[in-house]
Amino acid sequence: MQIKLRSHGVDLAAVLQRHVERRLRLVLGASAASIREATVHLADVNRPRGGIDQRCSLRVALSPSGTVRAEATDVDLLQALERAAGRARRSIRRETERRQDAAR
Image (tube, rainbow, N blue to C red; front, top):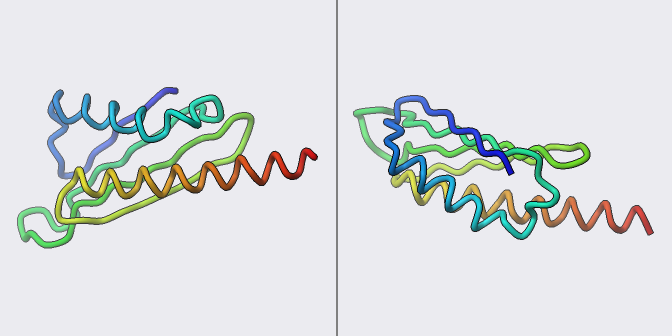
């Protein structure tokens, strides 16, 4: 599974990049055979003003076709990542089940 990271207003230090990739591989790993690539967008919406403004948007391209999108906003960027990854995992599972049911 290929993972692409993008950011807006967030410093993507090497440690944060490795953490994001490791968490995505762990959370989405069970569905890795169905995933072509995952694109992660991390953003600090309000920047220095603070508040609930750390956003994580995921776009997961499925194999052979299809896309799943998930988004979460939280005070903490890593919590936003966890919530968005969990939402993406559930959506991928539903899509995979739909495809299997259609094939029967």
